[in-house]
Image 1 (cartoon, rainbow, N blue to C red):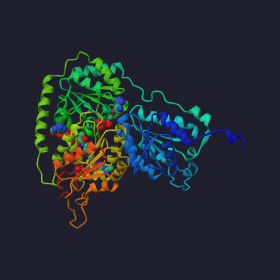
Image 2 (cartoon, rainbow, N blue to C red; image 1 turned 180 degrees about the vertical axis):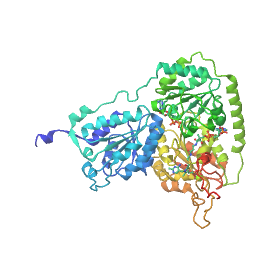
Image 3 (cartoon, protein in one colour; image 1 turned 90 degrees about the vertical axis):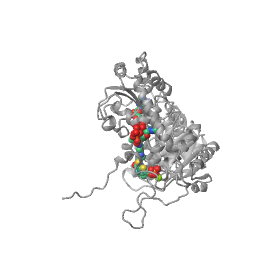
Image 4 (cartoon, rainbow, N blue to C red; image 1 turned 45 degrees about the vertical axis):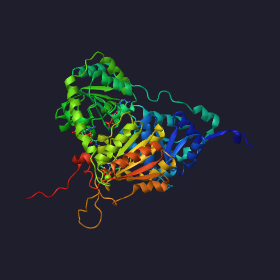
Length: 571
Ligand code: OXT
Ligand code: ADP
Ligand code: MG
């Protein structure tokens, strides 16, 4: 035996696995294939958890949601070219939402790829990823793995979180090095999510402005939920008596039935408020970009807490920027506000009175009776609301148009980070991936309220939910189409309209084919009892919720964004 063969070697798979573990990664979501199949097997052999999905976008969605819920980046592993591109959609969504995740992808050999010589699954993945992620790195050599993975994790979780792409070059994946040298390179990074303290002057400016307010309002966004300082945020709001408006995924940060919740009077408080403290939310389309009719056509005095300096003044001038991490900013603000009198009582009382009236108006519509198979969004989701109130630990996943907007309005949340939805982009396709990610990291039941169109984007991953026996119940709000199921073809011929699906689809049969539990609900009473049975059983279940095909409106509550066909103006 030569002296060379006596040196113990470590391969790139082992270096990758050890580096991921050193960075706190326990789960990988993905689809195997050349050149990463053996990497997945090695990961499992080393005790790592792996969730094999049916489409990489769903795996990446699972990773993004896992990152959002835990603050530890979810990891998605894909094969080159199309596998990578499928995963990139989920990584881009995570970046847009500010969720930490890492997309790892195998890649074809660098020599062939750079000369475009036509290798198997050849693609310039690094450059394709770059515009859609927070950062894109390539690890070219086995000895760079520990630094490369640490760099990816730190980038994903520090500052505004986002997705990081890591290109696993073919040359690196086939590499080995002496084990003793490799082991010396492995390390646990120190403090990957460092605190970022706000400047004392900025804190004083914000506190003074808040103290001067006659009609203050706090807007909580999903950044506030992500920050995991729930009790401090609650204390700030309760100590000051300021009403709060939760953005959709911040619902439950304080319980929806909290006396200071202004969620039921959104269109009253936004124009009325004089000083608005924004905690971890962007003044993007979901907040009418901070201006216009939604805001009473006048510029508010905004205090904005955000970790990303360039978020300040992104749409309108911010009177008191507070740049830093939410935990530090809230702590500093609470100290600076000590002794501040409670927000004016008449402001809060007026909100509470109007909110009660809104809720009273909504209540009878949730109890309305409909013929079997003709449920609407109100009575079906009213039934869901009442069941979920008994199981507040359940994570709700929600997408669609009417299914989304009614779900957000009707279903109350009582605990933080228990609502995941179409998010900043308003996209369909988050569904089954989000269910998988949430079920894996919480270990608690997950209920998805899915438009029938929305479900179609990720539906095949119901099989993954069954295969891993995850405690997920998927409710398909089946109105037979996108927005509605009864539109006719504008041309008058036989082809379906652009928004219609096959009438009477039994989605419950789909999960039965995979070995899960299928149910078909035609009345709110049936839905209520089926949902409760499903949650309690923790068995993968799909409930086909049969709605009136006329239930729903075009684009849900954002119909104002539609572009109508223009007719020629008369001469
Ligand atoms: O104050 P006012 O009076 O205004 O009242 C508000 C609240 O105060 C009140 N409220 C309450 N009242 C009483 N009690 C309680 N508890 C209560 N809580 C609130 O209710 C109202 C409404 O409250 P809200 O929602 O807070 O207020 P508002 O003004 O609506 O808020 C504005 C927004 C912008 C913040 C809000 O509307 C919002 O968050 N919207 C998100 C919208 C969104 O993201 N939509 C999804 C995209 S739509 C479209 O793009 C679709 N596509 C295209 C497509 C997409 N998206 N993606 C991909 C990859 N490909 C294609 C498709 C294909 S949707 C879609 C499928 C649709 O079909 P499905 O079958 O899936 O779904 P169905 O529609 O069900 O058929
Ligand atoms: P929403 O959709 O709920 O309105 P957004 O996703 O638009 O929320 O905004 C979340 C904001 O929170 C982002 O601007 C992001 O930079 C910020 N953010 C996220 N995490 C933190 C944190 N720990 N500290 C401070 N800001 C944060
Ligand atoms: Mg529909």
